[in-house]
Length: 145
Length: 461
Ligand code: SF4
Ligand code: SF4
Ligand SMILES: [Cu+2]
Image 1 (cartoon, rainbow over the protein chains, first blue to last red):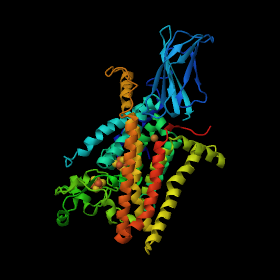
Image 2: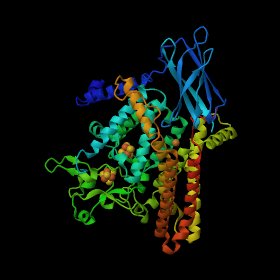
Image 3: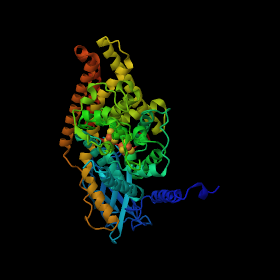
């Protein structure tokens, strides 16, 4: 017996509707992370690393050092950067500071502090001196209080 | 206005829109919870509004529950014929689901994952549709929904209740539409269902199991049912034979549900203070466990079932001894357990209120960023420095006051239960052990709220 026969004429459109609904949800779910687009900055050839002191990180003033390099490992200077710290839990005030460029591709946070313990997400964003936008995100687990 | 046929739908539709936004953003939005509607709206705003609504009004969020919008189509499309299986009666499955929910929230860091949050919402719609499409009545709300159980139990402390205005009107009523539903006299078709949670207004006592769905209000031909102000202590004064539930002293499942929610208020805040992480790490080491969900499962079973059961048995037994009572112990324990509900509720208010007042304004930058991302430049650049609604010292003070009021309410409830159980002369002695237990919970709650917040996803590694 085919599915066609098993369902009454009234039931067929409902099943279709249900299937469309389920398909829509699955499609959405598989599209994960396209809005905002974290990986989609225009500076794919530039690598960014960060170093945080104190290490291991704890509540209180901290220094976030950002290191920018191009494909050949040469320092990238002259960028305008902003450093933002967020908790992994929504609803906490973010810490947003600027970064001061030093030589050799190093940038140092200006007045950063961990305001509470827990898991942090550090986002560094800004513009390179050639005008391209850059944004990278780093997970920082377990800042102790 | 509440009599209007579409009153509930009007409250549900905006919440449905918000649920849709959460699912959409959860699936395709940023993966950082603080930047995503699915990270902010459910875990900061919705939880805050739920407890505040319960505090000043009643079960407003079951009334506005968007998941219930799928119930009507489910009942029309699917058979909806079966009775709820007798081998999983009452709240047992709901208790299990509630524990699983509390555990998975911690074990899988639901608050930090918009994607999983969206899946929970989708799963909710699917489960409500399937369950209410297969079973009669409001089976999903009554026997399954963990959110609903949270509302039901904590609304015992709410100042409003759905109840009859005049008992004499009920006595002379012949149709009992509030439970049977109203039928079209010509065709015999059901035009307005009666209470699908099987609460018969004439014998309904208290807020337990009431979703504030307005069905009874709209079904009553004499306009004799309303949402009426009351003294929450009335919930505890008598061991009433509650419609659809029975006597609380005889409902072990309801008592356990209440205990899981009272102690859940502590455990749910457990996951955000430093000393607890160190304890969990120590526990993992001692037991030689490497899986975090496994350690947490032990913590939750111990903290939500074993320890509460042990504590209430101690309290009940002592109050038995002190009053030289000859009554059976178990009904006594069941009934007194409900006395702890106001204190547990106060802890929920303190905790969720904390998140709400510290983070309510973060919805502004999230909305701004969302609009910019979909190409609408209406609200300008995200103002990411916005977060708290009140200052930290103000929030601390509110928490303190709320917890103290909760303790007072629990002491009062315990006293009225004791007076009704043992009689006035022995009331104080009977209540004493439960007052001590309440004090212990109160101290634990204050300690937890006084710790610096430390929100962590993992404690091993
Ligand atoms: S019990 Fe659950 S599904 Fe039912 S109305 Fe309340 S929240 Fe919604
Ligand atoms: S119909 Fe039942 S659940 Fe709905 S408001 Fe009335 S008593 Fe409460
Ligand atoms: Cu919390």
